[in-house]
Image 1 (cartoon, rainbow, N blue to C red):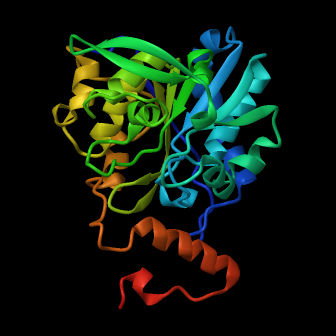
Image 2 (cartoon, rainbow, N blue to C red):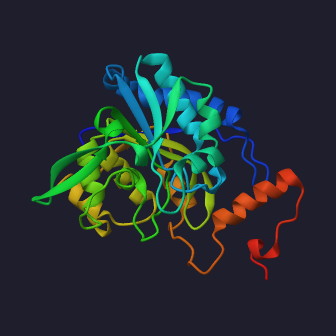
Length: 309
C-alpha cells in the first residue's frame, strides 16, 4: 500500500456552452479552493524552496478544452497559491523540440499572457545549460543530461490526463522525460528523468480529460509523480503492468490509495478507454479547437471536422 495517498479534489463544474469553456479568470476562480486544499500538505516542503519550477504538459498548442494539454488556469491557480505562501522564485517551463518552439505553444495556450499577472518567468528549457548526471534504472547506470533550471530548483510537474501516442499514460514521468536528454531505452527514460529531477510534487490536471474524446473531468489529483501516473493509468483503463516505465519506477509498491471526496468510478467512465484516434483521421482535439474558434468568430465548422465528408 502506498505510504502517502494520492489526494483528490473535485472542481466545481463551470458553465459550459457547447464546446465553450469559461475564460481563464472564471476557471482560476473555480480552481482557487481545490488548489489550496491540494497544495497545503506539500507547502512545508515548498515553502523552504528558493526556486520552484512548474512543468506543465504543454507539448503542442492544442486548445485547453481538448484535454490534451494542461489548462493554463490550473498553472495560474498554483502560481497564485505559491506566491502567496512562499518567497520562492517561480518559473513555468517547457522545452522546444523539432516540431514546435515552446514560446509559440505557450503564447497560443495563454501561458505567456497569464504569467504577466504574476512575478513568474516562462522558461524554455531547450535553451538552458545542462548538468550531466548518472542514475540507476533496473540495476544499470543511466546517463541523463538535465536543464540547469530543473537541477537547481524544486520541480512540480503538472501533467494532463491523456494517453500517449504509443499507448501508456502521458503522465508526470513522460512530461519530465520531454525536458531531459537521455540516450537510453524509451521505457527507461521517464524513470531516469523522474529519479534525476526528483520532483517535490505532481498535480494531475483532470479538469478536462482526453479518452476517446474530450470530456469534463472536473477533478485534480496531487501526489508523487509515480503514484499520480499509476492513478492516471487506472483512470485510462489500463493495467499498471502494461507500462514498462511505470512498472520499473514502482518496483514492489502495492496499490495506490486515493483519498478525497471524488467519485473515482464516475470519472473513470468519463475517460472511456483512453485511445487516441487513428493517424489518418482528424484528431478530435482539432475539431474541438475549431468549434471554439467558430463559436467566437461566427464561421461555420467544416463538415469533415464534424464527421462528414
